[in-house]
Amino acid sequence: MLLMQNPRVLLVDEPVAGMTGEETEKTAELLLSLAGDHSVIVVEHDMKFVRSIARKVTVLHQGSVLTEGTMDQVQNDPKVIEVYLGE
Image (tube, rainbow, N blue to C red):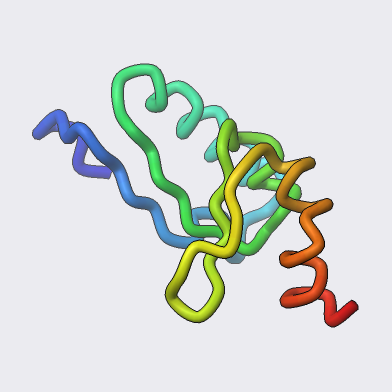
């Protein structure tokens, strides 16, 4: 990561794709440690990983915000269930 330039915002896309469990845990620790000094935006489909790091979750659908909230709020949102689980 390019932290030498001290960015205010870090945008990380699929940071744990293809990683082992141990590597995923280390990445979570790293991102959480950076969140104290930087805004960290993570695009990720691994919901277990997201749950381990996220304070706020935003769900996008067809280029627009579908919902935002805590992980529990998002996972129980009827719109999210309908769009992503087909119920």
